[in-house]
Structure formats: structure tokens, C-alpha cells
Amino acid sequence: MLRVKKLDIFILKSFLMLFIGTFFICLFIFMMQFLWRYVDELVGKGLEMSVLAQFFFYSALTLIPLSLPLAILLAALMTFGNFGERYELLSMKAAGIPLLRIIRPLIIFCTFLCCTSFYFQNVIAPKAQIKLLTLLVSMKQTSPELDIPEGVFYDEIEGYNIYVKQKDRETGMLKDVLIYNFSDGFENAHIIWASEGKMEMTADKQHLYLHLYNGEQFENLKSQTISSNNVPYRRETFREKHTIIEFDGGFNMVDGSFLSDRSDSKNMIEISQSIDSLSHRADSLGRSMYNEIKASTYRNIVLSKADSVKIVETNNKINVDSLFNSYTLAEKDKTLGSAADRTESLASEWNMKSYQTTDADNNIRKHEADWHKKSPSP
Image (cartoon, rainbow, N blue to C red; front, side):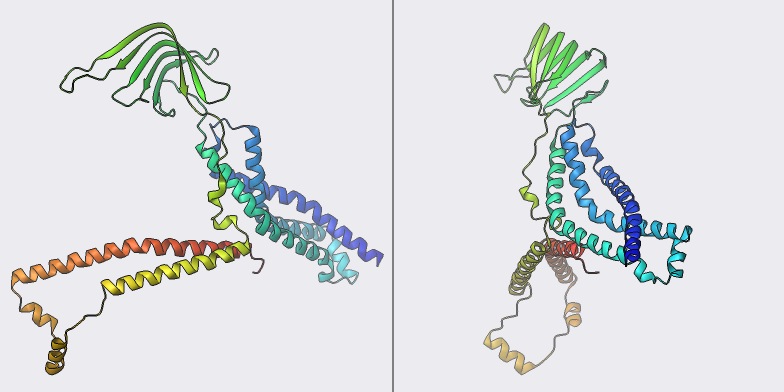
């Protein structure tokens, strides 16, 4: 019995040493792939290390269930490959130990990992997904870090276009600065030119503070009379001028409550309840559309009593082709045009109505797919 326990400990220890390494390698690969998808939201935003740490932490939590199966496979192959290379597996078989008995510690450990993976996928991953999506939305709404290029109009600041001919990287001085201020409207533009200038962010990261030297300012003035052909303007020459521009360069976390309706942010019980609600809503929508179409487009023809008696007496079938051929050329053109217009109108109406049912069906399928992703059954 003691030898059997030592064998179990030896096999499990060899597997765990490889499993830990392969797990973090797989997790790192998945995180790099995930990071590549959202690199545009991270680069050039001037995000703090705490924000980036939250991003990597929540992304790692959501990727743990994906990394576990691959890590188990690689660790098991490497473990028994090493046993076979060192003839340890052959020695176990020669000692009369069956293969199922050899892999029993791994089966027990993998069963534990399956339960852990299901817990992560069903409980922790939805919460981490909401946090991660909220963080991504906040990153997208964060203004990019201020870096005005040389020789190009910079329009990342709302209501402003800034042109800098040359920049001194060491002193931070800007040469030949041209600023177009359209915050009061295009017709009331303010234009500032300065031979030199310097730009810095305020301590609260809500405004830009501009120091301009040796320049001029032009401002359009509204004409007092509508019939005036000339637009007056005001010109100002300055040796030193300071101005403030509103620019929110800080990171602000948005309210992520609007993400709670996503299927990947719910556990299996919540997904099942949502599927029932969505299916009931889709059925109600389909029935209402059916009743509406039946009462309008495909309604039954209502005949008077006299018409019904005539149909019963004649009992003749109407030949549509003969009736159409009896028309004159103008009547045929009018009939075909009316039918084409009616068909296009019905097709357009059905396409508009199909958007609602298509969105409802797609939402139901997304919930069902996420339910199966979290389900431990094969």
C-alpha cells in the first residue's frame, strides 16, 4: 500500500510540475492574442499602470477556462513521454500495474480541474467579463495622449485644428504654431498664429494650457446687416498670450450596467431565464405580425350576398391569362405597373419587419451558444 501511494505521489508530482508551466504558457499565449485584438484601445492613451493591471487581471480570469484543457493535454503528453523515454512506464507495466491504475491520479486531478473550470466559467467569468468590457468601453472613450505631430493638422481636440511646423523634443517648444478654433461655429472661427509656443496639461487633466509668443490673432465678427458683402474681423498682435483649451485627458470609468444584458455576462441559470423571456417575446412578436399581415395583405375576400349567388349560379373559373390578353396595351401596362409597385411595397415592408424577428432570433442563438459553452456536458 505504501508503494502504491508513493507511486501516485510520484506520478502526480511529475504531472503537476509540467502542468504549472504549460498552464502559464498557454495563458500567456491566449492573453497575447487577446491583447492584439485591443491594442488600438491601449496604445497612445496614456493609461496608468493600475488600469493596465486591471485589464490583464480580468482578461486572465476570462481566459483560464480556455487554457486549462490545452495545459492538461500538453502536461499529460509530456509526463508519459518522459516516463516512456526513461523506461519508467515499462517498469510499471512489468511490475504488474495496469495502465488505468497508473493514470488514476491524473484522472482524479483532471476531474477536480473540470469542476474548477466549470466554476470559473459559470460564476467568476461572467463577472470578470462585465468588468473587462466596462474597462474596454472606458478605454475607447478615453482621449488619446496629446502628441501633436509635425507638419500635420491635429484634430483630436474637439473644435480645434492645430498645426505645428517644428518641435523641439528637448525643451518642448513648438515652432510656427497655427490654431483654428471652431468652438463657436465655423463662421465665427478664431485663428491664432504664433512663432513659438508651449503646451502642457493641467494637474486635473481636464484642460490644456498654451503659452504663445510673438504672434497674431484673427477673429471673424458677425455683420450687423444681412445685405453686407464684407465680413469684418478683429486682428490682435501679441508678444505673449496664454489660453486654456478644454481637453479631458484623464481616464473615467463608465457605468457598466448596460452590459448586463449580454449573454456572455450571465451564468447558466440567468441564460436559461433570458432564453425563456426572449422566446416568449419573439413568439408574441411573430403572432402580432401574422395577425397584422392576415388582416391587411392576405385578408379573405368579403363578398356580398348577391355576388355569392352569382358565383354559385355560374360556377365558372376565371382564366387569368385570357382575362389579361383581353386587355388593351395601356390596360396591360397599368396592370403590370400596379402589380410591380404593390410587390415592391410588400417586399420593403417585410424587410423592415424581418429586422425585428432576425435580431430576436440572433439574440436567442447567442444565449443558447453561451449556455452550451458553460455547460459541463459534452
